[in-house]
Structure formats: structure tokens, C-alpha cells
Length: 453
Image 1: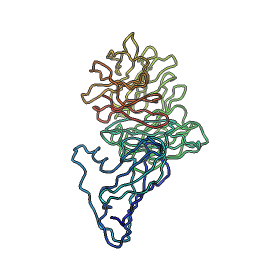
Image 2: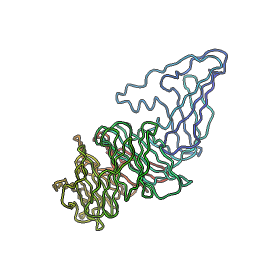
Image 3: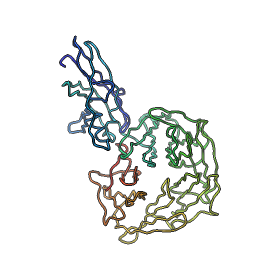
Image 4: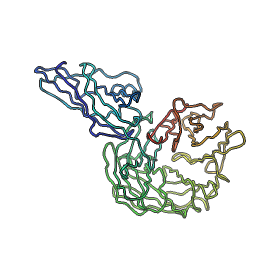
């Protein structure tokens, strides 16, 4: 193919780490006669390389074939390549998302991009592309029903806010790319976001919401499109994360005021409207979490000003099921949490001499206690209670390392290959309740994930 040439260019000069990165690849037959070329209808046969412009920097080899082999559960290997005839003087173009060929965000920096077609012995000239770090203002990411759904607010250098949404691929939460959904103006206060997870099979895209300056807006994204965006409505208080998809095409979101008033909202094709509201019974001064059930009932847990964790449940109509909030912990724990779906069992960590005690407190007050070896200087605790027979797992960051421990294992294990200096919002996710993953935000990079042992 000495008379054929190939070239590739990013459709935009820069992309955020983990964001979709579209490139335009041109195959040009400059000869007079026909040649066999990669089929435009089949899987891409091009191999892309991102090489840092900095000596010793990162380098990535990317292709549809590599991604297929990594994702295929059957390990059958890539299909045989297909070709077609391209007449003399003909050319074709192919648009490809090379970020989707990778299973995590690229390291921020300036890169040279090239493409190869090995069967024809062709290599393109270099083109430049920049990978920018995510500057995360808020982040909402939760796994349920075999998917990891994420939405984040990225603070741009010009002060504007970019909202990005991402859906994982089944089995591995690293698979998938962020897609730009909205660009908010620089004028205004901080932005809080909440993705909506499936409580029941809901279809019709993924709802997400954002709160800014006392106004709440909801939007629905599906694939590479935004299906609809509501008009903003007044909303007082903290936006709860996540929201919930409670029926086909219906999202449920909630806010809690400083006085402890819970207000819920329904997002549908007709827009965003107030739903039921209720008094929690005390004000939340720390974390406020909630759990939704398929029957529409809600459980809310929050940390009061003195550090005590309390909990209250509500029916689908907002009517409280207890006369007052129920005490979960008498004082401030090291860490605590409430699963967003499934059994609303609060977990809490407390120090006890040379050990850490993990308590799980059911809705009826029943408790189970597990003692764990202490970790000096540990922070960012999280716990995931598996449903499919696998042992529950605890994760923590200590001394710039990520540790994990299944409850039936005798000791902590260090997750290899990771250094944690400023890991923010570390939490445990699982798509199948067997393989457990830590997810966190790394300042100067973006969203990161690591498999736990």
C-alpha cells in the first residue's frame, strides 16, 4: 500500500481525563488502482497510540480489538478482520472514541496521537491532543443492578461548570467514558449533583439532578444525548445523593433543609415537581444519607450536631413510620454509612483500643459486631455488604496506601500499585456483589478505580 496514506486528528484539541475522546481517521488511496482496505462496516482495525510529549511520560496503545478481548466474557478472541475494495483516488473517514478503548482515564498532559494500520504497513503523522485533569466540584457515583452510574461537576479554568455523566459496563466499573451533558455559567455558587439509580427497572435513560443557589434542575441522559432538561424549581437545603429511578421514566430526588425538613421531587417527561415533604425530627449537621425501596418507602439516616447518628423511615406517601428518630450510634463514629438500596442496615466504625469495631444495625435495632485489626492513621473508611454469598469487605486509606479486608479474612491486604496522597470520597462499589472495587477522586487527575482483594 505504498500509495495509500493514513492520518488521524482529534475532533477537539483537548479532553478531560476519562471523557470521551473522538478522533477522525482518514484513509486515502492516492494510487490509480483499487486496493483492499479495512471494512468501514466491520470493527475498527486501526491501532492508536497516545505518547506523552514529555520524555518518560505515559504511553497508551488503543484499539477496538484490545478492548473487545478485555471485555469479552468468553475469551474467544477478536473476529477475523474484514476488508473491502477502495478504488484509486478514493478515501474514507472513520470516527472513533479512543477513550472508550481504554478502561480508565488517561493521565493528564500533552500527547502526540498516531494511528497504525498494521495489515497495510501504514503509520500516520503525529497530531497533538491535550488531556486535562478533572477539577471535581461535586461527584455522585453509585452501583446498583449491575451498573455504576456517575455524574460530576467539573470546575473549568474560566469559572464555568461542566456536568458530565457516565454509565459503567457490566462486570468492570472502569469501563465507560464521561459524556458532557451541560455547561453552566460561571456566575453562581457551588454546584451539587446527584445521579439516580434504579430501584426498579426504569428504562428511558438516566436521570440526574443538580442544585445551585437554591434552585434544583433535573435532566435525563441516554447514550450520547440529553433527552430532556427540566425548568429549575426552588429547592432549600442539601441535595441528597443519589436520587432514585422509581418507575419507568420517573426519577425521585430529595433535599434536606438546615431545620431538618425533607422535601422530595419527582422528575418526569412533564418536568420537575415537588412531591411529599416531612420533618425528620431533628436537624442534620453532618452526613445525610437515604435508602429507597421498590415499594416507594424511604429510610433517612443523618448525623446530628453532637455526632450521634439517627435514622427514620417513611412510607411512599411521606408518612413517618416511627414517632421519632431512632438512635443508631450514641456518639460520633469513625465512619458510618447506609446502603442506597437493599436492606437499610446502617454500618458504623468505632475505635476500641488496638482494634476497630464494625457494627451493623438493622432497621429493627438488631446489631452484629465484628472486630478488625486497627490501621494507624486510617481515613476514608467504607464498607460493602455483599448479597450473593461473597464476604463483605471493608476498605480504608492509611499511610498513602489503600487497604482492604474481607470480614472472613484474618488480615488487611494492601492494594498494589496505588499511592494515595489526596484521595477524596473513596467508596466501595460492586456490580455483581462478588468483585469489589474502590472508587475515588484523585486531585490533578480525575476519577480512579482499583480492584480490592
